[in-house]
Amino acid sequence: MFDLSNYLLPLLGGILIGCSALLLMLVLGRIAGISGIASSLITKDTEGKVWRLVFILGIFLGAMLLQFLIPKNLPFRVELSTVQLVIAGLLVGFGAHFGGGCTSGHGVCGIGRFSIRSIVATITFMFTAAITVFIIRHLVGLS
Image (cartoon, rainbow, N blue to C red; front, side, top):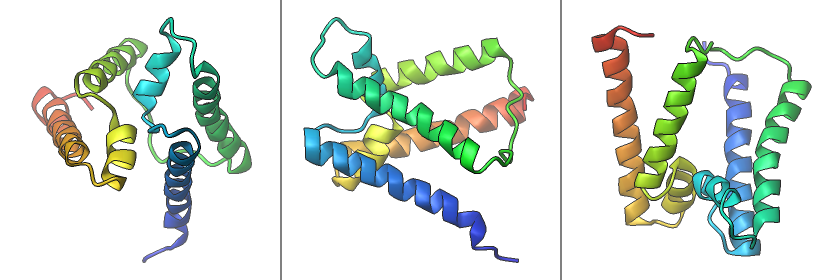
C-alpha cells in the first residue's frame, strides 16, 4: 500500500538542500559543493573560512537536530569496519577531487544550472556507484 508519509521527509530534505544551495549562490555567488567547501577549510587561504565552517557545521547540526526531533532508527545499518569506512571515505575524496567536484556540486547545483559538464559528471558518479556496488556485493561477496 502506498503511504505518502514515507516520502514527505525526503521531499522536505530535498527542498531544503535546494533552497540552501540557491541561497548560497544568491548571497555569496558560490556553488554548494561540499568537497570544495571542506577542502578549502584545510588550505592556508583564510578568505571565506567562516562561511565555509558555518556551512559544514550546519550540515552536522542539522542532522543532529533532525535525529533529536524525529528519533526513529534509520532503515539500514552500516556493517563495515572503521578501516573500510576510512578507505571508502578516502576513495570518495580522491574521486571528488579527480572529478572536479562532488555530487552536491555537480548533482544539485550543476544540473540545476543545466551544466553539461555537471550532467555528465553526475551520470558518471551514478554509473560508477552502481557498478561498484554490483562488484562488491555480487562478485566479491561483501555486503
